Length: 161
Image 1 (spheres, rainbow, N blue to C red):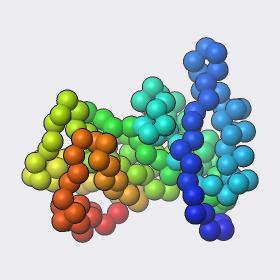
Image 2 (spheres, helix red, strand yellow; image 1 turned 135 degrees about the horizontal axis):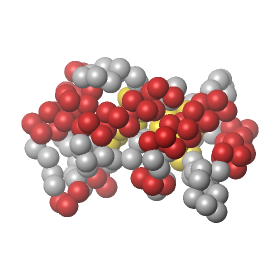
Image 3 (cartoon, rainbow, N blue to C red; image 1 turned 120 degrees about the vertical axis):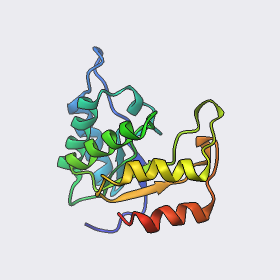
């Protein structure tokens, strides 16, 4: 695999009936792979990740891995969930499909909620204790808050995956 310097959040194409359009998805992936772009699939950031059922999310991860593995990096940034269990389930789907790195946000700050350091540590203890695949922890201010760098470093030391 040659050096990839850019990543693209890949939109998931749908048919007129609302099903994932696997043919169009493979064609889109082929164009990105030919351009040597690393790919993020099924992500919350591109919007449709929140609309996908778990079986659909699994399928687009599987297709992306089939098409891109060995050519460009295949990453996922699963949509934010309301619970640690929901987050674990999303990460597990990505890992089982062969996604190379799962990018995760910190706990979602919906409705103005800003977790304390202790709450954030508890959340990641619950999520990461069972997750062993490579993780990239994304600190994104659009989540409604920015955790302290020392807290993020503490989480990364405790969970090196």
